[in-house]
Amino acid sequence: MPVLDTAALLHWPVERIAGGIAAHSQLAELERLSPERAMLVESIEMEWMSIGTGDAEDAARRTGDLPRLSEVDLEVLALAMATGQCLFTDDYSLQNVCRSLNHPFEAVSNRPSKKQWAWELRCIGCRATKQADSKDAQECRICGSPMEVKRARR
Image (tube, rainbow, N blue to C red; front, side, top):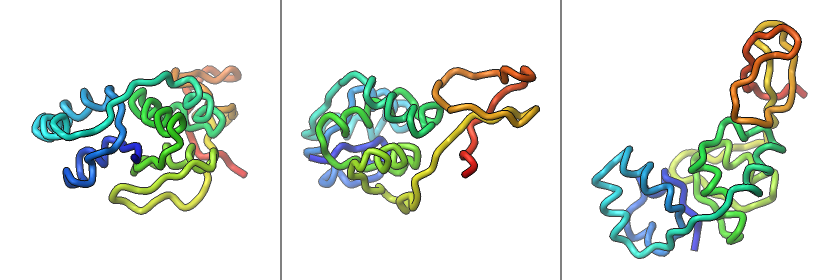
């Protein structure tokens, strides 16, 4: 039983979704994006689960993807990690975290990511960097300018 990201719930045929695993929080996201599709997906035989996101947040923090992931993304990732099942997602940040964990993932309709990336916070003023380990907006400790999430230079 694969873990399905919202992209799969939105775009896959009903037959392919049936039997999949999804997070309860995805229903609200589906209703916001497509109320008709949400009603259809709710009628399908699926396993709806809720789980704590602590391990998923830790994994996303290590890669620097945490600021780029929503609470729904983190719950979907936590489900995949807890069940050990393949995660179907087009979200490159989720794919990046899965790759860092050697967790199986497949793309829904886009091409899968090709490489592992690391992210950092970079000051728009003085260009100082620090680990992207929080979802909170941050200011540079050196000059006070805002910091943005950027791909880490290697």
